[in-house]
Amino acid sequence: MANVFTEFEKAVMKQPDDPCVTIEGKDISFKGVYAASKRLAKKLLEIAPGDSEAELNIGLFAPNLPGFYVGYFGTLAANKVTVPINFLLNQSEIMTIGMHSGLRIIIASGPLYEKVTEMAKALPIKVLRAEDFLNEDPVPDDLPELTRGDDDVAVLMYTSGTTGTPKGVMLTHTNLIENYKSVIDVYPFTKEHTFVCVLPLFHSFGMLAMMLLPIQLGSRTILVPQFQPQKLAEIFNTYTRCIFFGVAPMFQVLGLLAKSKGLKYEKLELCVSGAAALPNDVKNIFEDATGIDLFQGYGLSEASPVVSLNLPNQHKPGTIGKTIRGVEVQIWDDEGNRQPNGEIGEIMVKGQNVMKGYYKNPDVTAQTITDGWLHTGDLGRLDDDGYTTIVGRKKELIISAGENIYPLEIEDVLTSHPAVKEAAVIGVPHPTRGEDAKAYVALHEGAEVEIAELKQLCKDKLAAFKVPAEFEIREELPKSPTGKILKRVLQSELAKG
Image (cartoon, rainbow, N blue to C red; front, side, top):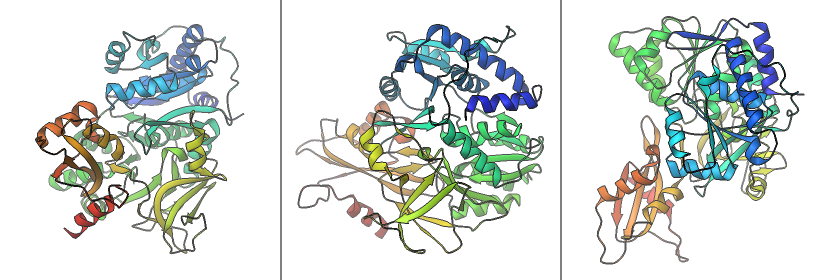
């Protein structure tokens, strides 16, 4: 039976005393993380012995700290489902996820423990501190046998939908195991590699590439809770054979730092950019300054998440690479017909990495998966060599520095202002973040409002990364004969300058 915790256990048995995670120079061994996870599992089984939704789904609210590992594997060791929560969301967004997934138990780590405890005061929620299980207490040896695995859900990962409401992506044990094993196949990774983690572990990209992958290899992961370029530069010149997965803005800053300080990241071996488009100028800045190749990959939460990668032995600049083992990509038109090479259409993905579905949302699941093929919402084309190039997005999703922004969610906030009659939000190009959101609003007759007031409203209601970078007030917004706002007209105006 494929089980993520069992795979972790195998890694522990191979190198129990080797460092699993390092933070601020302090190592925690594979055995240490394993022991803490089993202590947590025992506690979870004491307070949630059943398999009802409230007992099965366990929230995980943690930054890049060892506590994330403890919460993640402790949940799986107890035959439960891990529900990582994006702590950058505001309180109402977090509450929505909690209610949808039926959370009654949350594991919190570091400074987030106090935040969660405060939020949970008036709610029937039990909060556990992950660090409390990183102790010297005996390791439980009487945990029940693992019964979940294969196509059972291991992780419930929330991502906003096109309506702005969260969708719980159900990733199975098989999804995750097959995905990281396929990534291992495309590069000569060894346990001597050092993985440097700035990507948030609550994102599928960070979880798989920076936690599950190195664990399978028996490698050390250095946790960096926030992007600190100077600290990264020190790590890249200290630890052996560094592997760094990041997003484009990080590589731009690291490139500029190397150029301005004359730095060479001597022990940085492999760099992969994902989560958002990699602009050519960012790639050039980094490579020119460091002499290190920067490769682009592609994935999405619904695909566990890795779909394709450019790597040293096979790469083509400007593309998202070739698919990893066990994953297929096709290009379809709007009628579901496969397109020939060179033709643009929707990128469709099939393989053991494709999610089980959206939690408690069968209708949207059926719309998203057709005969095992995942609709990505991205538009692209395949070439004769098997490389895929993304040309745009079918959905209105805006991706800014790797964070998903859904226009309708912002539009709902803006139209909640009494002066605003209607609103439209579109993505506008940004040189390093890929895109920013721009909001257009039309006011009720005779109404007045300052842009600063609208911006503050968004700051109050939304996570910081969702607040539009630009606002524009117009008398009217362009509409179709049926009254639908024509965002393509706004996009066309921007393109014309």
